Length: 117
Image (tube, helix red, strand yellow):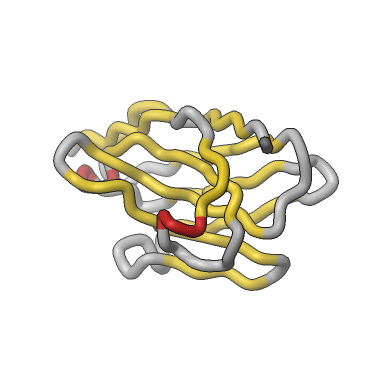
């Protein structure tokens, strides 16, 4: 079991930025960021495999996923944040490269992001 620990969430005004981090206890094939709200199912928003990345349309051009393999750390740089980005954000280790929740093999506990207008 890979242990994952997210950090970096918080409250920010619309148009602001946050950077999320996720430290993994072991190396993984692929990793991704997901988010969930009380009224929406968990959705994949970004994933990474080596130098390849995938993004959901809702965050493309605003969010950037990256990783430091030596530190086993995953990042999500979030710019131009909008109130609709408010959610609990989770990182996950993935068995396949993509955005489906079905690809996730391990989940972190999440970090809350709140964007006010």
